[in-house]
Image 1: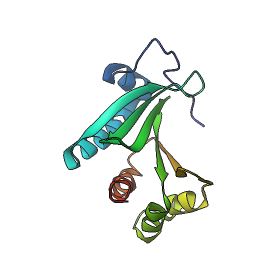
Image 2: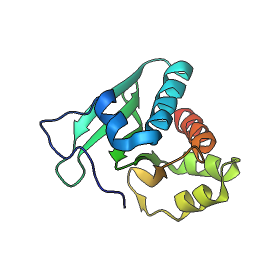
Image 3: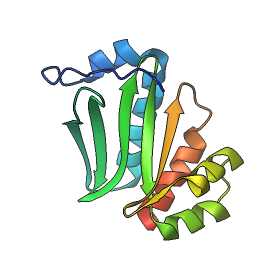
Length: 139
């Protein structure tokens, strides 16, 4: 598990701080943000502090619907999705990597759905993330 960054409630992250902390991964953070904003209307980004253990996280919503969380850490970040049953079925039929398909299918099921955290250190998962965003929006 990457070390949580931005665990000080008094220091809300901004692009300059993010760029310094997550390094090269920041370009992938920005790419995800640009993808969402250019493909969907009514996107809301909201920084929330979830306590010292979890730190600041950027919650991304479509209108009032939660799409995913972006969570900064040292030299990387995590994107976390929660998928309901219909979305899980769509993921099984999608062309995302078998690794991510297995992770979501094997994830523990909660009332709100199955969680899928993906650590981003390079561009490997970006095409899959864009597909997952499309599935999340449509299901």
